[in-house]
Image (cartoon, rainbow, N blue to C red; front, side, top):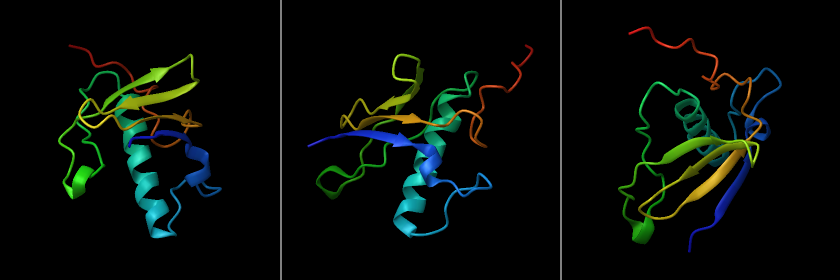
Length: 106
């Protein structure tokens, strides 16, 4: 059964803005959430982040669909294969916020 993650990225950050070091499981989740934000806020690059779930103890083969969701005031993601999904709030202005990267000139 898949649940929806509701995350505030600030809960995984130190006062200096870095990811928490401990506990280890929290750090792994924080890294995953930070990757979602980094890819979802970099509008010029395709999304390549694979789903972290392991249905029936096998790695999910899905690539996440990620986009900012102004209605939810966050970054939304969804795995089209297993259905894992969520919304990340509190990502604006963090180290992983790529939304202010200048557009590439082609």
